[in-house]
Image 1: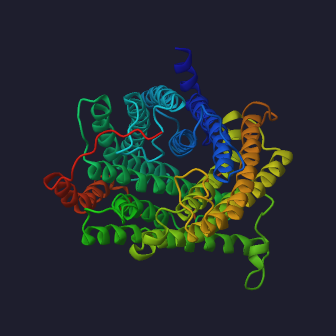
Image 2 (image 1 turned 120 degrees about the vertical axis):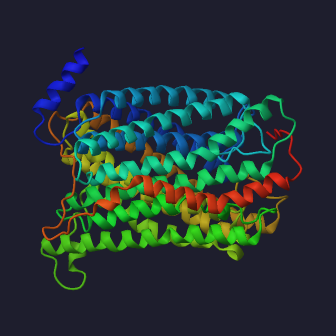
Length: 559
């Protein structure tokens, strides 16, 4: 009753947009888990980097593949998922006038399910019963408890997804004839893509449980790998869509500019939702049993994502130029110097955007059939992954923290904390350049991924990799320092910063902007189109994998 009365009072007295205090508790819970997991995953990342460089010998009770699995699962799944939910639930609360009570309940149910899932997954990894790497598909097998934990975590994410769907639909019914706020539109796109993109991997994990229990002797590896990568490919663009929500909506306000085009931003969301899920086979280019025509289709769908990305690049640099010229920038590039480079809320996402240029170019190489043959099983892929996720996505997430956490905590972003954030951003960027750069270079020399330190009997080629691996270790060390600073900043802003008000920055449209067309709100149509494209890309090959099934694989436990 007390919580309900607080909710009612807030709704009646809140004259300006802001996150409901009851909803802020949800965001703070998810964000707290996110950054605790980031710290643990970062420590594991350093251990992994030092072991990979030959600078550290792990004790007998801990092996490299345990560390690799835990690092991947915790950071790629748990850290990003909990941050996304905490951030977007605050955005939905802010832009739609608070969460509905049923949505709040779904968020807490999701929180509990995710914690249970993470506990089960981590326990099995610590017991060395789940050293199956981040990809966790057969023939490597884990304890059934590991797969059950993954199901719990995915159910938690789905609970949060349905919460956003409910809140979004309710707002639309209450505001007929109006377009939803852009932040809520991004949240809808993220969770639509996340939900439908995760159905395949959920089916895969459910089939792995009886296999790992010994109830099934073998598993169809081709189907399992395909279902996983229908999700793995999509997940990367879920992070990208989360990052672009801040680029389009928040950054214009932070730099004193305006949103370039509300319509264009929504079109980017729609295109990413429709085009993204097909493309998973470009992660399986070297796999046998997949026809070249099907691989080509998925490569085409993967490259098509470049179109909305180029739209984003055009829109954002137009925003930067206009804002810089409003600040007095003259000449061809004078506007560039007028941007607020000393503001971490801008600096971190700006570096993230710049990093997406080489990251996207590397993605085109990974997607190319001929070039993929060269780099597929090398550290090039690890370097690509870290520059796209570790900089483009994660550095944007860090920049978001410096306004989001003070806002939901009713505290201030102090000049000292802003300066610390700038220092952290520089350290993180330097660490990622060293680590990811060396991984790209040594990958071209043939250094394999998914392998602990080895000199292959002191072979000359393997010996030539060692200097690059030392640089990787230095970069990993800087990254852990950056993580420690970031975690300190997050909890300082959440609990110890001076009390006060911090703005939830939402960019406004240009004065002469055209109204956003209502057809952008036709989510039923966008979902149907998405499912049609998914069916076109996956129905035929999956049926072929079933009809012409390869020999099944029994569970294999290597480490």
